[in-house]
Length: 248
Image: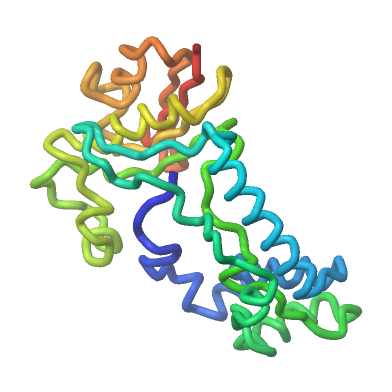
């Protein structure tokens, strides 16, 4: 499951500091997709044709009831958050997809020069990806569900300024105990995952094993749908995420 905060919405330094990005080798995902397409000789027409085919297959699967992993998403109180997959668009055609502007213009604000300096044999970077032929965020194969849900208890002051000062409240706060969204998301993950599939849940360092039944590991252990519940430390040695395996 994805956060409602736009990708790079917190403006991490490596996305706006070109010198830092070059030093650590960071490139935006859409541009790296263009780089791969250039390497493999994939054209804009190839991308549009496959996108239209993929959309038509997804639409048919939904209409014929062959998409059991597409389920409504509710919170722990049963309130509907999303009742259908918005990525499927019935009207998509190759012609309509061809009319869309590529994500990057030639040059890509210096990224092309950076890439060609490392792979001069390419000659140029062909920008073939658009909002219409790029991968959507979909429920997919349901082997693993990874979530970074809102988990801050209401009324709590967030410690990290880069989060507190930039993230919207709906991306941070998860009800009185911080677990309201997590409980609803656990129910959805149980539907999406096959037996043996794994769920990965980020939480605060106060919602791990030390919280007992009020923590994320405790909530999962009290639910017979899950086994092998394990809390994990992040790189700062703080308990920050829990994994569990779908049992039945």
